[in-house]
Length: 168
Image 1 (cartoon, rainbow, N blue to C red):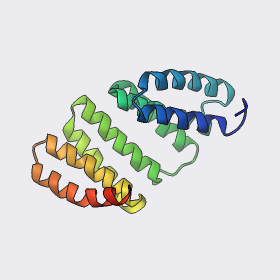
Image 2: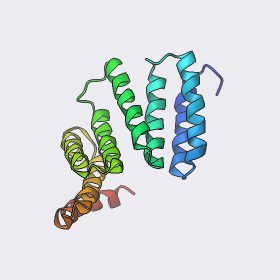
Image 3: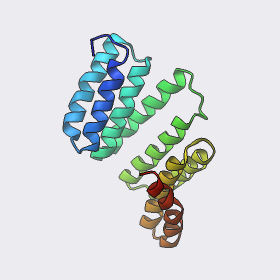
């Protein structure tokens, strides 16, 4: 894809997401750092591409266990999308809550993780697709299990797993 092509950054971000999915976090981080610098210089920090790269960097930080940096990246991505006019009720912000909960778990704050994950689940039940709701339930089940409530964790998984199985 040619330099300056409007689809270049989204394709590069998809490439990075594939690297992340295959455990190649160092390579992905290196590409993301270069991509962010390029997008910042060419398209500005208020561009869609900039926000897209921030989201991928958030995912990279989450996969590498970098809660402090990842939370900052997520907060900036949230700010950028709000500034671009995306309404706070958009499903993207419910997904961001899932990431907030994941970062809270990484920091060891299970009470915060549970509170935010429940909010994400509530919002996804009205705005998300069935798989997103199931994934949020499974994540909440992990949190509940870590907090010692195996019964609720099992109930949540009973609701989540059939949807997840049907999705593959």
